[in-house]
Amino acid sequence: MPSSHIGMGATPYDSGTTFRVWAPFVDSVSVAGEFNGWSDTVNPLEHEGNGYWSVDVSGAQIDQQYKYVVRHNSNVLWKNDPYARDLTSSVGNSIIADSTFNWMHTSFSMPAWNELVIYEMHVGTFNNDIDPGFGSFRSIKAKLGELQALGINAIEVMPSAEFPGDFSWGYNLAHPFALESAFGLPKDFKDFVQTAHQHSIAVILDVVYNHLGPNDLDLWRFTNWSENGKGGIYFYNDWRSGTPWGDTRLDYGRGEVRQYLRDNVLMWLEECQVDGLRFDATAYITNAYGKNNDPGSDIPDGWSLVQWINNEIGARQPWKITIAEDLRNNEWITKDTGSGGAGFDAQWDPKFFVPVREAIVTPNDQDRNMYAVRDAIYHRFGTDAFERVIYTESHDEVAKSLNLEERPDKHRIPEDIWRGNADSWFSRKRSTLGSALVFTTPGIPMIFQGQELLEWGSWDANVALDWSKKDRFSGIWDLYQALIRLRRNWYNNTRGLRGQHVNVYHVNNNDKVIAFHRWENGGLGDDVVIIINMADRSYNSYNIGFPQSGTWYVRFNSDWNGFSADFGNHPGYDTTAGRATWGDTDGMPFSGNVGIAPYSTLILSQ
Image (cartoon, rainbow, N blue to C red; front, side, top):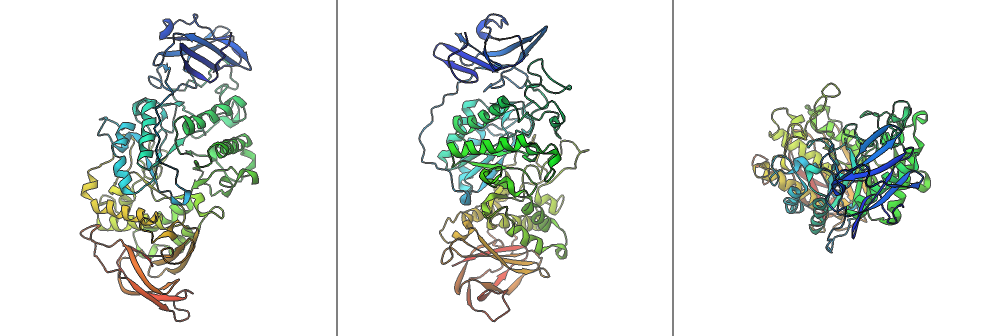
């Protein structure tokens, strides 16, 4: 008879393990494994109705390997468990996993969206000191103290579910419920999450639901049924199946597949206790060709799926964040589901990344477009500035190409500024201008691993981060730390950097100087003025407007020679703002003079 225990996949109990699988349109299912000598007949599953099969196998133990044997007519398919929490490899066997973990109480709580500072990370390349050859969750743990000292309070981990081989970006996942075996065991991931929390760091995990595989994919034709030469029960079997990464778009309209993805979300959020999810390429969930405003190729099932998942998360754990990588400037992605939106809390913002990066990598000063920078500072998707994640580097934008015929290599910003001379004065000065904008513009700031080390070249999933640069460019690390602390109001004098409000009141496109005012409620310790000089010239006395009179103190001067011995240490002195003469300070009520170096940022507050 069918099992009385609940749960999909392999669920251990006191004296054995329950196995449950969805396999419609088949004649029989059995489970073979180390517990029965790999017999494909000893432990048949009973049909529960609606395509589900289950059985209790006495003596089947944690860490034993198994597979399902699916029969239909004369076809016999040996398949890994779609819900497998662990596998020997992407082409190996499923493993009965122990889902329990000794979670210890910590005082950690998820930061508010306006306090988040995200560090995007690839497990395999972040640190290979512990497990030589490639990184692991154990090796990340060894660096958590340094990341805490840097000041970030959230790690975004690139996809970590089982993928083919040991080296990958992770977006070609083959088994969504299993941790990549090269990165460690399921308990290693949970231990990493717990240790991150002990360091006051949230964990946000990338998930990929726009496609699977396409390689090493046991879900492909999981049963003998398929149509039009397509993928069978888990996938669309018509024109909606195609994606840029393979013919493997999941069938968002099939109830069991929707449940499968929802269960995957809840496993990461509840069983593994991650603090949020970043959904990859959501445009390809909601539209067959990743387009915006193209109803003819929309996938309504995909839109309703992300609404359902976001509603479920909101009802169960509303403090956890969901972030969309949509990149289509679609404000409906972050609108609430009640008004018809997709319900994500935030989304990556190319309207910031593209103009800011262009402004800092453009070789000639006269070609920098300060009005485009202004628009990047102002851009938002709705009324909440923190519905967007802003950055100058992400894995996509700095990566060595996997296929040069599809696109050329992309580079780290210091490399793009001066190819082959990424450690130059120009590269250090201008790349950190972009980072200053990231940490002072309204939005959720994000950096990609290694920016704080002045990493250069192209990021490669086979090459470890060069941690020796932390000592070589220790001042760059200090510069990032200083910016992050100001962004988080570490010293209680830059609260406005966490606020909703911004006024870009000074745009000098001739001399390439821009200034803007940030505030939450206004007043002492709240009002912040940011002045950025994007030209290779300095000013001993540059007149600028201020929102309040009195003394304004320099909290950050990127030209300080403590950040680099060859920085000029140009005095960005404290200044006293007085009543402005009408018309000479862009409409601000008060004015003062500042000194500012070439390619430099000043942050002032009262």
